[in-house]
Image 1 (cartoon, helix red, strand yellow):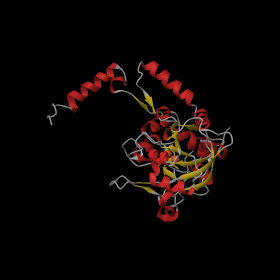
Image 2: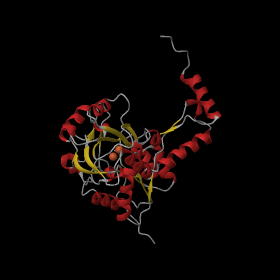
Image 3: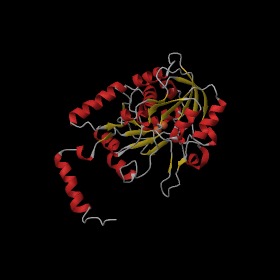
Image 4: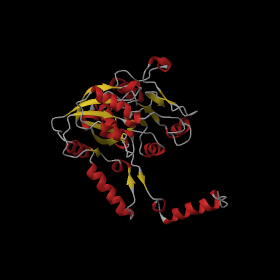
Length: 341
Ligand SMILES: [Fe+2]
Ligand SMILES: [Fe+2]
């Protein structure tokens, strides 16, 4: 018979994985733990403080099943409760009333007896996996590029088996199982009789923005545009690494019109967008789940994978619910014709 694992043992395992970064008591909230960080865009009332460790629940509770996910959502809560999962481990920080479907965490989690753990910045930087997936080995890491906290830069050397941009892309596509993801989306389009469907992981698929598949890749500047990396940062980094040939943007992508494209072109660099945020469950979630499985072999661990699909307004749901949407909108939400402007 397998041994019962408690929430406390999950927290101890995470503390071991992170080398002691889990919150252990009130002292950690008073500046003792550098991974207790507040994320704010200076929008009143919208800041959130990361608390690596238990956000809600009881350390003495036995784990029925655990689930590793990127972002806690109302769908994740409902999925957990309906499938016997009571230990939710979210990578992205949890905000009250936001990651709990608009109601207080206390009400929703207590209803289902759920325990919530978060582990975000305290997980970052523990492993070289994101560089490896993208076909390079980081030889230098700056977590404050240009003096901006959290603006991460890896300077990497392409792995021996990755000699061209085409190699880099096909490696990523293979590891991310992109062919199957694309085929699945095609199936969904056919099944629903709608060609105008998009899904996040495939819509933001890895791509070459500047350069050709046969271009050589050697020294890579691996950036994360959503952390604040600017064209000025690129210029500055290139001055320190004039032998770099490729900029690799991952987690977030760079779209046409962004200044980084022009700057990369001006500097003679190739530019590739790698994995988007929609694939972080593989980059960070899977290794975390595997680490927990190694330390707690008796605990059943599941992966909650988000799949965000975009439908045209007319294509979502069945005709009955479409009619419902039209009726409610016209009878209750838009009672009078809006005054013309
Ligand atoms: Fe992350
Ligand atoms: Fe993330």
